[in-house]
Length: 232
Image 1 (tube, one colour):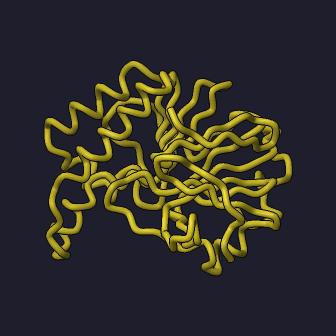
Image 2 (cartoon, rainbow, N blue to C red; image 1 turned 180 degrees about the horizontal axis):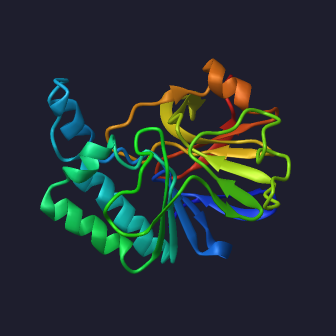
């Protein structure tokens, strides 16, 4: 299994090619922003008609990461569904597939802005998840906020979040490429979107530049994840 190994607040982590985060020491796989059901939600709201295969593609990659890591705990870091109606509208086959993935593991659905309420697929629901020295939440708190570089009530020292779907445009091996990416500094990690039908926000955009301290790196997703200085 290819990965990029790094540390955050002393936790030894691995960025996977898919955009998943593997924490071997905690037996934990974290994925963010699956946005399952986006094609259904867009059609329901009168938007463009997209091929309705994104749920199967996203679940297929998730199943591969679970098989490769053997993770006993999964944190879905918010916006797992494009909205709550999309969660209830999953076709029976995809619903059963998701329930099979959830059932044998400790599965935590962290609430996102698209899916703030519990969903009917098993597992548990939480506003955020503390697993010291890390705290997992959907949206990063601004610098100086509780849980991002300063100990919170549970003693967490660093923050893992999603929400922004970061991507980076870089020159790599004489080619100009754009890839989803993790953003990492000394206090926080922002995960890329895991879902198939998800766009992205460039790392040089103002919200991400304001969140990330110097020095920060972008860990590019793809067959061989690698780190580059965060483009600003």
